Image (tube, rainbow, N blue to C red):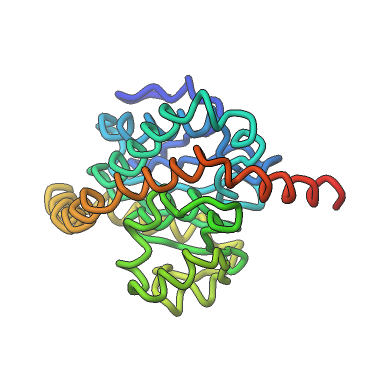
Amino acid sequence: MTGTANYSNYETMTFERTEGVLTVRFNRPEAFNAVNRQLHTELARVFAEIRTDTETRAVVLTGEGRAFSAGGDLKNITEGAGARLDRTFTEARKIVLDLLELPQPIISAVNGPAMGLGATIALLCDVVFASDRAQFGDPHVRIGVGAGDGSIVIWPWLIGINRAKQYLMTGDAMSAEKAERLGLVNELVPHDELIASAQTFAKRLADGPQRAIRGTKDVLNKILRDNANLVLDPSLLMEKECFASGDHHAPIAAFLARQKSA
């Protein structure tokens, strides 16, 4: 691929640029694009790298296969919650802040379930297109962990603080139709039209006046960056303390056992 950024060294994402629009796909379809260690580390550098890509004027972010992203890979959590804890949360902070500071407009094309960190990343994008097969939720609390990976930064701004409390304290998921009705989703489209619709919108922004579009985004995102400055560090610390306590071990073991017997 030509351009100022080299995306050949990514193992868990694919990249395709067409006329100024970079389409990025999470590429772990066999695991519903769950965020394992490798994908988490790559997420912690991809948005900063796109920032330097002068040939990319807009971005579409989606998932390969049936899911956008199932969130954190629970197998990795049980294996690595001790030694990698500090690095994981340093990366988690960088993912959120780099995404909020990305100058190019970014559109999420949510092609299936977007859960936990997957939902956070989708919703932190500037515009959310969702397939009628999409679902949204943050089930952290169901495995004994607080919702601290950035969801607290964005959910209250989109659906109000009390609805955010409702969904983040229960871990309940919602359909794409309900997500649109509540304000999590900008555009709900038939599944087969999702990528084309998102790319068409991205192309419109890519072809528009860049200084004006990026400046408007930057000023609007100051609101979210201020909110991140207020709540991101304490929410990550809260989540980290939950992991350090070991409260997550039993719920995750039960979940994995149910998966194995299904």
